[in-house]
Structure formats: structure tokens, C-alpha cells
Length: 396
Image (cartoon, rainbow, N blue to C red; front, side, top):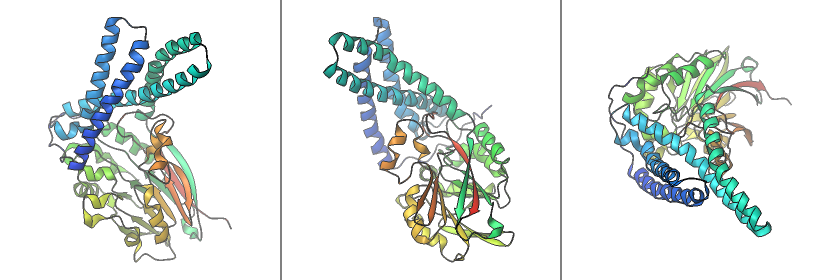
């Protein structure tokens, strides 16, 4: 059973986040009005049914932004977690409901240009029922996918001139766990148990570990200190660490035995062969602390040139700078692979890679779909992953 004691509130959100939130509330409200106008009159509902639909849309419009900000504005737990749960569930359902309502309107528009009036009327009635039914089904399937333990993905990374002793070296990557209002101790413990059965030489955590303050979540991140590997666990900041107090969290990660890498590197000796393991702060870090600006060149400075090198960088956006710095492999996350359809189609508007293994010059970039989830407890078409990467010699 999860703890229900009172804990200090998280740091207040920055002013620019509050401005963004105000804009989001206006947009979300307008979109709920759109869904109501387009669906409710078309559904075979009584007056009480329509009233219930309006109430549910109003609840969704209120709880979605409240759920996102509960940890900032509600100091008591479990109340803040309960509000976050409610807001997150409504957010997942709303997302599918909005997309399907919009697609329905597109289909109806096309049909009105080519089909008979009777067939359009039938399509209108049938699709009005199908949209909420499909939205609910996708949300339920997505909930199941999000709450089960992430699958293990096996990837081989061919490295040129790899030292023989490093052939078969195993890195297990976790990313975007998002321990917070809906992801707690038991969820994290299940991840750790699965990782500890993978025979890792090294565990890499590529940011967005938490959504909340150290006092709120210390007990729930504690299992990460039991991650087992030959050379230990290394972690870098993601953008969400900066929303939650990055310095405090990096200190806490160090306390439980994880090594933080903030624009720095270590040289791991593996059976006499060196492996450079570097990490950078998130690419947005300078917005919170100018001294923590992400810098792959600095992270690699002083490392042996001939050694194979791995960079932990939360966002794939770091790849260009990592390539110029001479790294062999970059491990990233941030994108969640889009988390659920259709948002996976839009990730490339902000990031160079959505998920999987890609090549940029001599640099390999692996982007994890994430081990947890953010916001809606929902994954559809973008399954969570624990990634087992094996270094292998590149063929001629």
C-alpha cells in the first residue's frame, strides 16, 4: 500500500510554465466545446444522457489542467495524487476522443461531396456512436499497456575498432520512468527486478526519472539504488528533473548509489579495455541554470581518443553536437516514441528521431520509447521499453 503521509509541496512552476498553462486551459476548453457540439446532438441520447455527456466534458476540461498542476497547488497527499490520476485518465480519453471526432468530421465532409443524403445521414449516426466507443477502447487498451512492466528490447550496436574485451559489453538503458503521482514504488520495483535479470555490465538512465520533489518521491525512487550491474548505474538529467529540482535529485541519486554525469565522463575499465561513459545535462538546462548548459564537447574533454565512447543525453537533439564531439554512441529518450497514436506522427517536428537506432555520420543514436509514461497512463502503438544494448565489432 502506498504511503499517505503529508509531504512538502514541489517547487513552484516557473512563470513561463504558468503562462503556457493558461493558454492550454483556453485551448482545452475550446476543444471540449467542439467535441460536445459535434457528437452530443448526433448521439441517440435522452435529455438526461445529453446532460450527463455535458457534465463529463466539463469535468474533463477542469480535471485535465488541474491534474497537471496538482503537485504544485495541492500540498496534501494522497489528494494531489488522486487529482493527478483523475486528470490523467480524462486526458487520455479526451485525446482519442478529439482525434476521432476530427477524423469523423473529415470523413463526413468527403462523404457529403460524393454520397447520397441518406447514406451520409446513416454514416453520421453510426460514426457518432463509433467515436466514443473507439476512444474508450483505445484508452482501456492503452492503460493496460502503460501499467504493465516494460518489455525488453534487444539491440546490437556495431562499433568500429571496438576493443576485443568490449565485444558483447551490455548496457541496459532506462529512460523517462516519470516516477510521480501515478508511478510509484511498486511500478519502479518491477522495472528493477526485470533489469537485474539481464546481465548488464552497465545501467544507463537517460533522464526524466521523476515528476515531483525529493521529499515527495524519495521512497518511490529508492528501488533504483538496487539496480545491479558490473560497473554501476549512470544517470543524466532530463527536462523534468529541472521542473522538480535537478540539483536535489542528482544529490539523491548519488546517495542511493547512482553516478550522475553532468557534462562529464568516466572511463570504465572492462577487462583491461577502456570505455568512455559520458553524460550531458538536458538541452534545456540553461533555461534553469546557465552554469549547466548542455555541452557534449566538455563531457568528452580529456577522454582517451582511441577508446570507444558512449554519451547519455536525454534528448535526441543532442546528436549533432555529440557527433562533432566524436562519440560512437548516443543513448537518448524524451520522445516516448510518441506514447500513443497519433502523436508519434508529430515527434519529428521537434526531434530528429522518434525511436530506435539511427546513424548520424559515425555516431549511432538510439532513442528509447521510454520505460514509464508521462501524463495519461496510456500507450498505444508505442510500447514502453527496457533496452538491452550489446556492443559488437563493426564488420568491414
